[in-house]
Image (cartoon, rainbow, N blue to C red; front, side, top):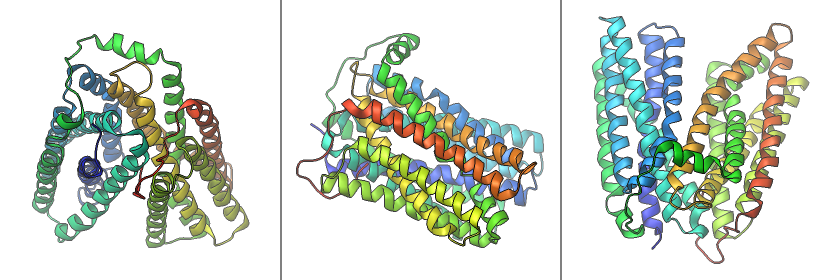
Length: 429
């Protein structure tokens, strides 16, 4: 038995819940700490970095779900830990004005729990999808789950913003607690009973983690794909902290205009993800290998356009940024589909460990990429004009995308064609 479309959507709702809680931690609480609590921006930056750093434990969670069976309990348990961490983070915001040291220490504990929860739940969820999704539906499954995650982020940000005004710490506490509890309940309901219907029960196979991860790391293609994930995700996140400053410093955008630019980029991401699902799954156009490499090369070309309009002083930044978002979305969703395909290749019953390894590479790359982009721009601006400093950083990012495309073409060349011979035109991963 493999996952039906309805079951894929149900599991996608778990990804929606992950996005809903995390956006409050990385966006809303970030702003509250800096603006309302007047803390240095470094404080929430370090806390968010901690949540990414903790996710280096993803291979451990994937390995546990492989060897102990019942991935659903890790999905639900991880969500419970994530929800608890979110509530503690909101409590810390209440505590900081009266007891700053205690509040900050509580924040550290909270964000560590958030990292653990995201790692355990997210890794086990992807492992379950990789194990139980039919090869012809993997592109669709990835698109559905990621679009639902984006929907969860957008809806939570919009709705919670309405309830937070006028701001008070207790309103914040109520919003975070409501979202966290709702996400946990929805996760339980959405995931209940699916695994037992589609995955054959097997006896747990106890094995030392070090031995298990060594076996997986010994697979040449797993190592190569880990490198691809790291390089492509560094490139993907490099522009995260510098694109809006680029728009302001080089093009004279106001804060409102630069925020709208970010929205336009995310719109491009959404269209790129949906397009891959519809074309790959519904119209049998292209394989995962083709879509991954096209997305990486298209992203590099879009970055070249962003550099060119800055150097020429042309007011064409918006279409260039939308194109970047489009190709980023195309590459990202095809890469997740490739992860699902490769997770089941090689040594058996190791889908979770492989997903955990690649998830850890992605989390480390997310933090490293944003930091690298910011540092390169700061260094460049000390000796070069703004447009040139930003342009060289974007050029470095484009180069990483080209290298990632070359690795993908090589690593994914022997994966069986994942196109659907006859199927639904449903957005896919």
